[in-house]
Amino acid sequence: MPATHHPRVPAWPPKSAPRLFVAETLAAGAIVRIEGNPAHYLARVMRVAPGDVVILCDDVTGEWAARVSDAGKRDVVLEVAELLREREAVPDLWLCPALLKKDRFDLILEKATELGSARIQPMLTRRCVADKLNVERARAITTEAAEQCARTALPELAEPVKLDALLAGWPEGRALFFADEEGGEPAAAAFAAHRGPAAILTGPEGGFDDAERASIRAHPAARPISLGPRILRGETAALSALAVWMASAGDW
Ligand code: SAH
Image: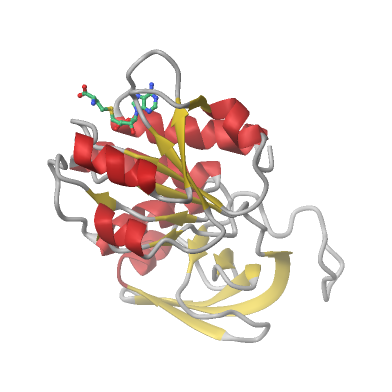
């Protein structure tokens, strides 16, 4: 536990205190003004009043207790009090899922956050039905998932990139586990044998075409994996591979 400035009494901060990620880096004594939807959430939904405690996270330093100093119609003003937890460490795993139809991809965003992916890199392939991602909306989904699960770290969320560009710019030293429904090393064994930075690549509704499969397999970082004899939907493949990775190479 981090050192605290005041002795912690059991009721403080209350478990029911609202949690919120903010854009600015937090420090003791900082004044934070919340506007827009988050202000509505605090003032109207959670009905915070001056003196109430709100838990703030910044995705940099960690989790802080803050006190409401003013709760108006348009904004809520908070004063940051003390650091409660430092930002958690997250295993160095990227998830690179092909873009899927909206509700399916929303599921990936939410669940990959809960499962602890360090970075989500959406990818565009030839058979992608969806071709755009509203990154701001996607960010709202990952943030809400992290708030609900009391996480102090958000996954980094990247703009979608084409498969070719992703492969061309692939960083040295990061294993690229390629979920290939046509076969590969069993995922659990491949993950268990691996140490170091990694990523999991999964395809869209219609899978990869032959040329894509060949170019992924030709990449020096690529490690084709199988997720078993059953064909999974794109979102199931991404999330189940992530869970298996956390269990065998991550921090479960
Ligand atoms: N090509 C399929 C469906 C693709 S499933 C079709 O006939 O329509 C979507 C993606 O999930 C695949 O591209 C692959 O990355 C992953 N996937 C699904 N089942 C898999 C399995 N059993 N092993 C490895 N990857 C799988």
